[in-house]
Length: 639
Image 1 (cartoon, rainbow, N blue to C red):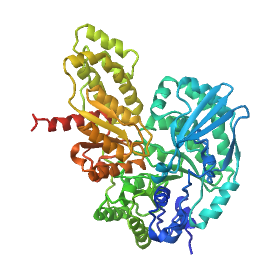
Image 2: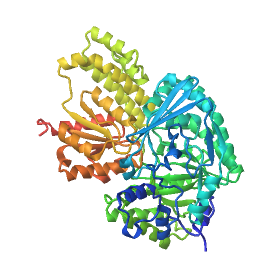
Image 3: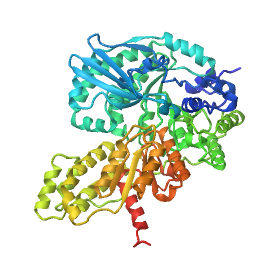
Image 4: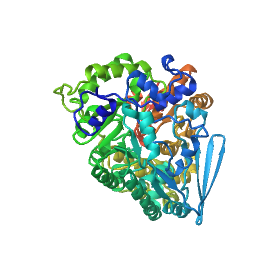
């Protein structure tokens, strides 16, 4: 009888298996429900892998550690510098002898200080029972190692003198005792693909990285060079390990790892890792759960052997059929069933229709291992997982019937024909915004005001005009998040110079916006961009920050009475919190008190419609335009 391991390895190595496999990733669902005492009655008291075995499912290669346990916490002590001691790791790390490490835990926070001969750098992570109830399995990094240019020196010393050494016994015990023949044990390399990517992922906050990448490139590249020997050590370790599959590189996304950046900073190292692993008879697995529309060819050509946790439409823009058509000739795919399909917000008819489409989308089925992307959500309808497995058992014999269907391509990017920006008195200011020149723009605004140019004209014809152009370029793929961030920063520097005159002429939008990043998500880059642009065009903005609970959003709607509530998420896992916020608004009978707009890297228009949001905005400029339309439609004049 063929084991799960044999079938999965055949699929992942590109061979023809006898049938499709459905391997759901359970740790988010399991940890949340085990903590709350809401596991299905038939599985009460069972460990996560035992639930999978009881259902006949393969065991996924992840695990749900109790981060509140004193036995587990030391394994994640250095999470802030991207190093772990979890059971899937193939290495131990040795800190420099002349670096003193001081730690302090209090109120769910862990502070770690690294006192080096060149100075001190520190990180702060957060994890508490509230995070565990949401199923979060990794402490959130809320204060990063590098917060100013002065931190590069001690950070570089720390990494330059770190050493990695092999430790295969921990991985072997996990593979033999917990995974067995019921799944595949994947060894962990670095979650970052390269040293620069590690700096972006863990060492600098998301917003700050784009500024450092542009303005402190020399220091950043010096640090990357000091870190590269660690990547060489890791590569030697994983190539010599007993792991058949190695996870290296995660969370690619066309916004955060925009295409030119991916090609320059990520793709070369993936090719290098792939070549070494391939020569050792091993497979390179990349965790590709983000919005990949602009990265499809780059990831395909990166050398990766397995694209794990692919998350298709409606949670991202790329349909499953397009993923399979473009990647399956050279890549094995793992995932393909978006988490929203398992939630109550998806009707029974839509659930069945999606599953019908799955079998057509991945025909003939070679190189396809089905799973839920990115994770089975805490509020999933458990019987739907059982029904997916049952359908795969009944209908998944390979090869699947190939239907004569036209390729399903993602929606084309918006490429509006726009006239060249005029060469007028506002040209220099527009260029300041487009080029992100935040230091000189204030002087140029002052010069125009001194010439008698109205503040309203400067705002509309220079600042907003430039931001609209940036939004158009981003929509057409000609600009990326770094460009938008720098432009927004320049605009934010210019607006205060105009405020006095704008107030005197009453040039202010009549509208209040409440904005925040949803619970469990500590990313603020998209939210900050939207808030900056909204303030720049004159709206009153109440920024609730990150990791905002459902209750806090509801309280803010009652307290501030906004025209629009904006919800942001950067992860495919945390975007599932958005329908919960809408549900909480309904339960408190304030859903119709304001419009609700959603956005963020993984969010799509289809997802927004599916969860019942009033609007979706792909970027900050479109958010401002949509809010203007909402407020105009609700004004007395419109009535």
